[in-house]
Amino acid sequence: MIDTDVVVVGGGLAGRVAALSAARRATVSVGLVSRSETTLSGASGLVDVLGYTPDGEGPLADPFAAIPELPEAHPYRVVGVDGVRNGLALFDEAVGDAYSGAGTDRNALVPTCWGRVKPTARYPAGVEAGVASEQRPTSLVGFEELTAVDAPLVADRLADWLPYRINGITFEFPAELDGDAGPVDATPVRMAHAFDAAETDEDGKTPVDRLVDRLGVYLDRKDRVGFPAVLGLERHDSVRAELADRLGLRVFEVPMGPPSVPGMRLEGLLADALADAGVRVETGTSVVGVESDGGHVDRLHLDGSEHDAWEASQFVLATGGVAGGGIRGDRRAVTEPVFGCHVETPTDPDEWGADAPLGDHPFARFGVTVDDELVPLADDDLGPTADDGSREFENLRAAGTVIGGYDFAAEKSGSGVSIATGYAAGAGAAGDVA
Image 1 (cartoon, helix red, strand yellow):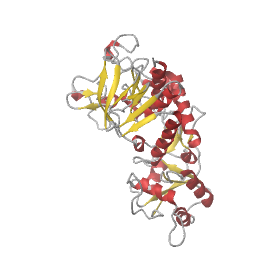
Image 2 (cartoon, helix red, strand yellow):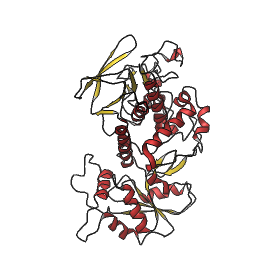
Image 3 (cartoon, rainbow, N blue to C red):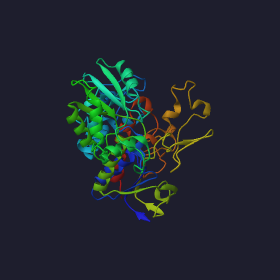
Image 4 (tube, helix red, strand yellow):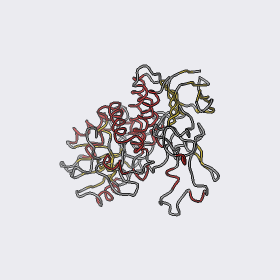
């Protein structure tokens, strides 16, 4: 059995930030348990604070100005504007110069592989040269093997949004992709490994050499050029810099969907930060039982772990929402499966969704209800106050998309809420260690 002060359940962005936040108190020991090792590989790597209001107004230029006007139950209203800023400051500290956007309240508009522009507050440094606010002629490059990105189509769609010339070009990928490329056998990851390896062909040319040879005659020297976000996992800064130098252009990456190379890079940055902070991390394990006494969690029982139980003074629940399995439902009920926390839902399951496929679906806002200290409530009808006696467990806090009351996909607020509530939950848990 492991005995520590704070245990975080969940290895996504919220859980990692919560663990980092708790570990800032030097006298507090922190552990993190997660069933997956690559929870961030499904994320774009962008950190959105608030792109649109719940009413669909946007894209927002200043997300912080809109937070005080959000519904009272929104997680941002619980932690407040200062809580959001504190969380982002911790994130900025953890990722360093690998990310851009710190030091401003303004959202950036980042082109995506779907041909749209996304309002986001923090973004990988390799994306910065492509922000849409810089009105500069742009070329986008796609690879024939990467069928998820059609560069000419993306360019056509972006041209409807942006007031400058955009064109798209598609080439064969400049390296052999056969064989085992690593632990995640997916095309974007294999491409990234190929750039990392920089193996030479029979002519002594690396992937960057071959790419420069093919692109040189197509690009206007006033252009900037964007590539799918596959320019290496470990060497992406040097690969991008070499391309920029050889082409004489500004080079950037265009964020993609899963499997996401920038998401994997972010996971690596946060893993390093957790290790530096002394957080004990165990992945590939699931919580199969919770021991509690009188509204107080005592220990967790795990499956797939070398240790059958983790005991702690404080716990943080950060297992994700409906999409991530942290909230589960069938035709009868919606539940939070780890601690059994209450999830408020309409009595009639027919009211959980909307008729229109892209309508306002109530299930998108399903999650645990929390008080002003992020402690899950047994019944949200009793009201969100810390002293109303309705807490599920006095030593359990929640963070991230397991919290209900907002639609992070529509608002473009998922990463920001995860960071802000993760910071607050971790700090609160560390502060309450007996």
